[in-house]
Length: 228
Image (cartoon, rainbow, N blue to C red; front, side, top):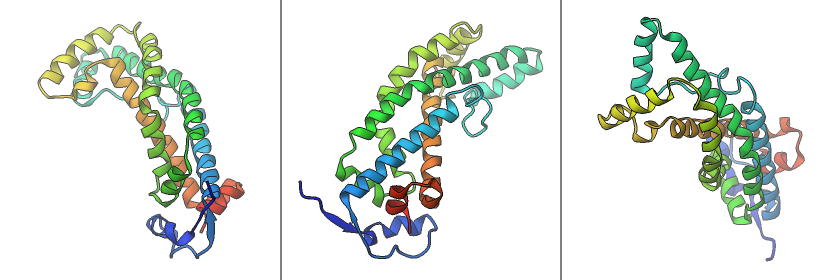
């Protein structure tokens, strides 16, 4: 396929939306450069997210991604703590977050594979897209297969906690009454979903940094593709 070029004016709107000032000056940016830049951003975001979350306290110690009990159950937990059962609740919350921390490193292989499948057309759309379009691409391509890898890890990490069966029983009834989402009624499904949310959130945070200040990345291709 013949390598085409598109001008930076085509990506000016997202740049303005990110608070980067006026439209980018018209300069040719090849589709090949766009693809290389987006792949570099994908890899950077994936590595940053996995290294940040896939360690002790990666979830538990980060209030932005820490996994708490869902809605109604969180309120109920406050009552249990008031009756002296706080230790058991804390044990469950810790187990949920430790499960997410153990699962996240498994995502790296699939995230890297997604980078390799990026087409030139995908890359152009991403460069023209919003401040988390790289992350959105990752989520679309990888959320389901990564979730499948997470489930058995989450299951092993939480099954020894005494409140797991009680969680499922109480959450199931709560879901039937519309107090929590149906997908949150099963502990392993709930933790897997929140772990994925945290993973893509952190990838998005890294992407925002890249778009806000590509020069600070020290990457020539990121500066060329995402720079003003």
